[in-house]
Length: 159
Image (cartoon, rainbow, N blue to C red; front, side, top):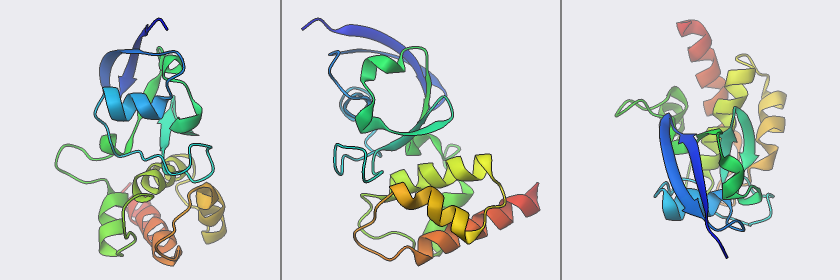
């Protein structure tokens, strides 16, 4: 199978890669670009462990082909921090102990950031609805929801 040359912007940097036309964006991120935050939990778009944003839209990277990233802007969990400075959501997840094994955490963080970019003042119900596509098998969701709501309040206060 012929490989395809792709140019995209990933976490603010222009990247180029060659990929098989059947290769998923998740595989490209992990295997070609060494961005291993997104995880394959199910491979069917049901668990959210591979969540990234593509042109500002929250997507499961296991459901998109790597060649479809041509000319797109992709943000992964690795792009959330500003150098050594964690994103406020990352800080709150640590403060609230809103993680356990870490498989789902990157996808939840990306999804929560996407929510707060669209809705800086979500209700608990809206946070739960938005994160419904991100499954966690290790912990209850209460700490995650509290961390997102507290981050939203802090970010509103700071702006």
